[in-house]
Length: 164
Image: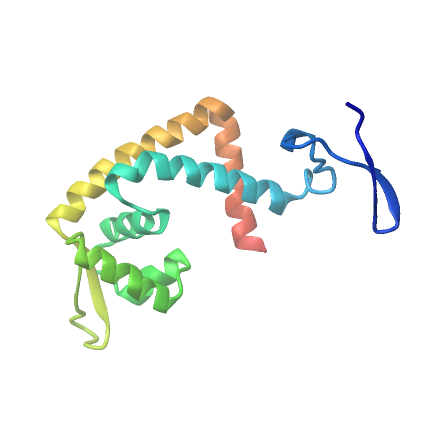
């Protein structure tokens, strides 16, 4: 069956075949760092979602648990700033982690207006399981890229985050 010609925006173009997403041209996007980075991030986050589904953890929740686990007793404002999470969003995130019994906020000894953060025993146990899953994901990425290319990618991404 012959493809039809369409007139769009005053130009004659050939009608694309239905369902052929691979035929969509991305020429003007394929070499853009931000586009490639976003596509890679989406792929990694989709994989994260599959791996962490049984733990019911989002990437932001995992990052928060890991950072609190590495920095017990630090102020809520310090953890949220280090992770780049806006204060109102971080409060909601912490509310959920507290509701699930994974983390707790206590009044900071030196500043009663601030909250110090810590993991509960359940949070420590869940983080242990989550870190094992994260290790599996990192191993899968390394299997795709190789060890040196993975290290180079992480270093390049850190540099971009610092400099832009």
